Image 1 (cartoon, rainbow, N blue to C red):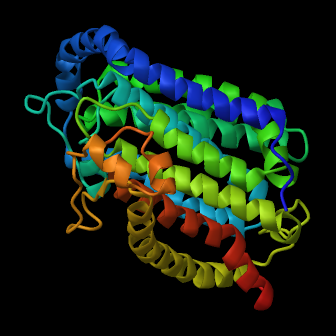
Image 2: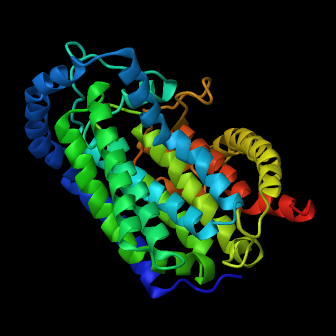
Image 3: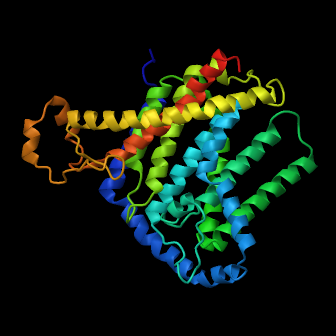
Length: 406
């Protein structure tokens, strides 16, 4: 049984709740948007000529090059890459990159929806969306560029990890690493402008915010990792924090897919944390076999062949369970819900009468202190779906590996 909540955890959760209440009462999102968006919009319009000059170099080869590079640093790529990193034995690097990815996704999308600044106007700008993921990205607001932000943070952290792990690296290796990361960031920035997805100010903001997040993460990563593997109330604290993050997220001027990405990666972070906390000594400590050292390549390939189908099945089952369970729980508590895509038949009732509260049960009256409005149950379904997927990556699948001697 988990110990009683510690003081710092109580302060952290209380601070998050206080921020939610204060920002709502003071309409902070609206105030910040009214100050920042006009300035950003002027820059986006002024930079249209620059974008058109870059796009004048248009050719099919560049279209393919920048589209491929954008896919390689996209959220779906990392979602597929990180499980392989866990199963290769590099669990510490994998969990820290997963949490950093979730942190980047939340901060970046929060800024996007707070500012609600437009992307370059199309036309006259030519927008290239080669994949479904890119089409969804185009529906988001512009500033900052998530691709630039994520590339700075994740490639920068990976470089730091490589340079500080194992034997001390010489100056030439360090310079080569910095050069490769810089070239990648430059390619992403130029590519996002060439594809018509972002203006220069979006790229600059993404790189700047990414550097700040990376510097902060390098300061706190050790404390976060120690808490996950040996702290108190890890799962319950992270569950409460994830719940509060849903309400702390700013409301955009118009709905965008950004909140969906936040819900998914917040679920991933919760699944990783809860799974690693339970199985660290068995599967994720620093003594586990690693690929290209004590883990044979064929064994790793066997893990991939077993692991990928398993996590996909868990993802499907988690979604089905959430679609059945969440509406039942919400109806029991008297929470008004709606579904925008997962449960098409579910409609919410926006006109909730105060007089109806008198007819509610005890638990329903407690819930009734929250704003009387409908909540989108799809966010909860998405959270549970990806939490289940992430948990299977670090708990269920390694257990299968153990039983199969992989």
